[in-house]
Image 1 (cartoon, protein in one colour):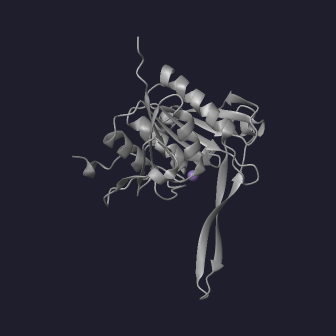
Image 2 (cartoon, helix red, strand yellow):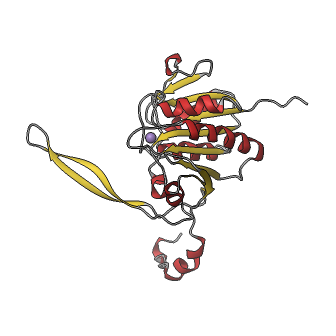
Image 3 (cartoon, rainbow, N blue to C red):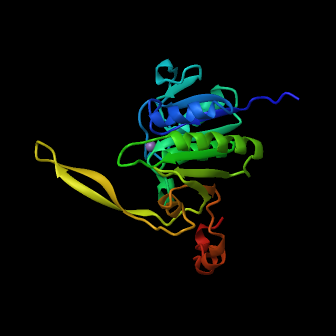
Amino acid sequence: MIKRRKTVLVVNDDGIFSPGIKALGLAVAQVADVLVVAPDVEQSGVGHGITFRRPLRFKHTAAAGFGDIPAYRVDGTPADCVVMGVNLLNRPDMVVSGINLGANMGDDLTHSGTVAAAIEGVSLGLPAIAFSQMSNEGEYDFTAGAAYAAKLVARVLEEGLPPRTLLNVNIPPHVVGARVTRLSDHRYEDTLVTRQDPEGRDYHWVSGKPKAEYAHDSDFGAVEDGLISVTPVRLELTAHDLLDTVSRYLPEVESSVLL
Ligand code: MN
């Protein structure tokens, strides 16, 4: 029996000219047909934003170094790229996002455009994986992460993922293995850095002080040990254990506003 080669949509949030998406696209092309759709400029930190107040352009981009792999850039967000990739091209079998320059662990998932692209894929009913690479003093080596990505994508194409779930993968600078993890309680205490422009007017940078948790079973703990961290993430955000507690103190609605 001839097995049809599957199609994988490759997206990112660092933009189509990032070395991370090139490494991922070329690696995944060893195990599937690849289509690349990515933002034309960096969109890190935009989360799951979508563009619906202006039109979007979709342009073939030969210059991004993907060779024979069809690559398109979009003047929108990572989630826009997934919507366009899934609708304008043949519906892919899977969405993969990255490889992001920098980790996406713990609370980072709520800001990450890389993870949001995977979430958009899941929302459209496709299995999805987000890949992020930690640097070695500012230098990124995608060799180990890209090779692992090709193998993991091949596995998920075979095994599938349950509905409403994705895998969030973080790759340390020096890889000695892999571990399944939970999201750490890794967060930032957001701060504001205020400076003055040459005219003496204040301007502000949103910044953050990281508060990391290094527990052994967490994503942060795994990459500290040199392990590729693979976290299954579910889009179900309901706090089921609080349904009773909240229902106990829910205020009554004034009868005058009831129909
Ligand atoms: Mn990024």
